Image (tube, rainbow, N blue to C red):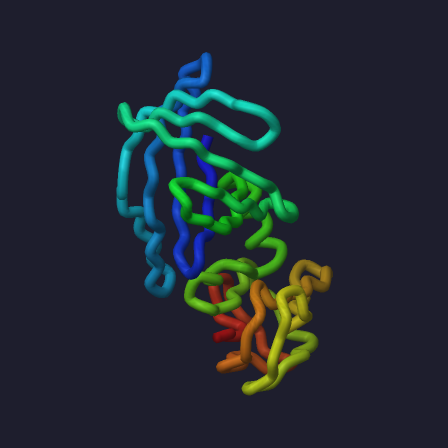
Length: 181
């Protein structure tokens, strides 16, 4: 099974193969995007032996090195992971669910701060202007596609650096709608 993990401004693909009885083979790739081009760079391959202790504590043997890992779900798909005294906050979702979320909410390109459309359509409403402060979930643009209105929301808190569309524009799949810093 493949998962997508977002950590800070980086995106990773994590392929997990369950060998049974707490044994897993894991490959971790960093996803790099440049325009429409996407590249997966292999960072590590691991063999894991995982044992659960209690509700959120795991004993993990990774390539013959032992780790104690605490995992706590903070909100849907967002986890805090404490390992070796370091606290990490990640958004993790299975790859297909992440692709669907991006298709529905235009979150492709979030790592770069770009909100892109994954469909062709007509811009019917623009809610923001350059310089506006936005909070995660604020509406940015409404795009009409296949007789349905699709609302694109801010994927993170920030300031609108650029608005690349205006009402009435027809945009193609992959078009940048708004850039947020």
